[in-house]
Structures are given as C-alpha cells and as structure tokens.
Image 1: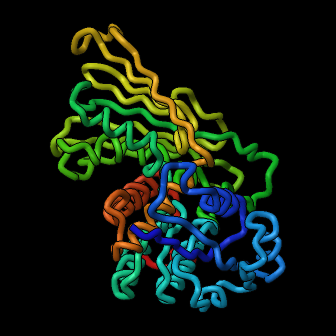
Image 2: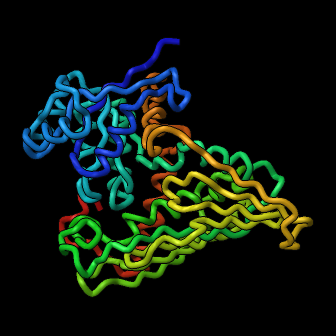
Image 3: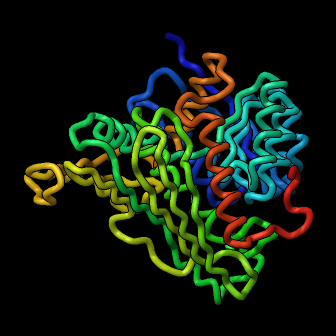
Length: 366
C-alpha cells in the first residue's frame, strides 16, 4: 500500500497549533503508523511575520509558505487539509471559508459554539464534497481504544454510573478579561473550553456502548456558577441520563478555579470499576478493578494499563483525517458528525439552563 502524505495548512499560530504541528511532524513509525504521513505546506496568520515566526519556531522548514491572511493560504493549491486552532467563536467562519475553498477540515473543539452553526458547516462540507471533523483528539488515542475494548467486553457488566471532571486553575483574578477563558466574546468559561473532555468519556462509555444503540440521553440537567468578573461560567456540572438500552447516568463537571481531580474519570459497573488518571484529555494510564462477585465492591484483582508513545497525542486524530481523505470519506466513522451534533445539543441545553447567553453577534448562525 502506498503512503498517503496529507498536505496541511495551519490556521492559527497559538499554543495549541504548535502542539499539533510538533506531533504530526514526528516520524509516523514511532507510533506504529506506516500507511499515512503528514507535511505542513502553509501557515496562515494575521500577518506574514506572525506566520513566519511560527514556521521558524515550530516547523523549521524554509519550504513552508507564510501567509498574512487566511484567505491567501486557502487559495494555495498545495494545501489539501486545514487545521483550525483559533478561539471558539472564530471556528465557524474559519471552517466555512476553508470548506468553501474545498479544503478538508480538522477544527479544534468545540467545533462551533452552537448546534445551528455546526449543521450549517456539515451542509457546506457535503455540498463541497470535502471532509469535516472536530478535533476531539482524546477519542483517537491508544488508551481510548483499549478502554473501549475492556468496557465493551462484558466482563464488567453494563456501565451504570460515570463521573468525569476536567478542571484547571486559570488564576482568573490575575489574567486579562480578554483571555479566552474569561471573554464571552470568545465563548469563554468552563463549559466550552473544558466540557468536551468529560463529555467525550460519557460518549465513549455510554453513548457508544453497543447496548445503548446510539440512543441520545433522555434527560440533560445542567447548572452553572458564573464569575462576577465577566459573567462566564466558572463552574458547570451537567448530568446525562441514558434509558434507551442502558440504564446509566453520567455526572460531568468542569471548573476554571480548581485543579483537576485524580482520578479524572470513574466508570462504575456491577462487576468492577475503571479509573482514568488525569489529564483526561490525554491520559497515559487507567486502572481496572474487578470485584469478587457482582455488586460486592470487594476488589479481587486490579490491572493497570499504561501507554507510552512519542509525542503528546495530537497525531492520532491527524492520522484518522489522512486515512479518511485517502479513502474518499466525508466524515470519520470514529468521531462522526452525529457525535459532534450531540455534543453541541448538550452544550446548548446546559447553557440554556445555566442562563449563559452569548453577546449579540457572537453566534453566526442561530
């Protein structure tokens, strides 16, 4: 089989874009990959100098082109796929422009700030015949694949309860109110920035479970505690109740003024428990506890699963994009459009219940 080398353009020169490019420029064989590879051919920013500085710092390849506008980069015929790492509220406009330029798109989470924007992007992608995926990188990591294998084997029984939290102390009293985590114009707050990660574990463990048969949660219950600094959510908790095949519940939370707990994810079954070590967006180990008999809580044996690989974990989602583009797919079968829609529907409902309304003009489609 010939190797598919996907040629990328990068929109954004921020921290997360740097993480992404460092990972995908690593040797694919270091993670056991031989069928796809990645090449960055262009970087777009708000100035040529910013793009060139990013290239010099992160890519170190003089052949990569620096563009002072996203539009110029999207007009480059050598760019096949675009990675978007801009703030949340720019995702829709950046992804729309990329899709209309007939570029395949991998867009950081959350892919949009509401469900209507996402439906619009999916329609454009289908009209243009190009691939679109949210960069929910956790779902493609080796640990997630092993987690699902064990969780769906039946040995632990059906999942009953899941607790997941991603928190981080952003020192909000001492950062500018224009920081992405505080600024409502950038979709600030805990839910959109941190919430996708507790949620992806609920989707993996409950929504994707074979017995759930892709049934959406019957009930979504959310609560928000807002910061007086800017009115965005400082702490959010939301509960998803599944009754369409499983009888299970996910209790999810995120906070911008606390450190992350350990374990970050606890999935409880009658026959045992799975505990995932933080950080839950890129964990390197989880523990499986097996009970001596169903419901006893007495641990008969315990297994620790550890995972090591070169890089931080962003490259696995890029490999998925390359394979999908190679195979002519318009969406991933692993992180589908439907799962991103479910994510945005849940976030819309939690924001509604929490009374978090974006400033006028932030939502591009409503």
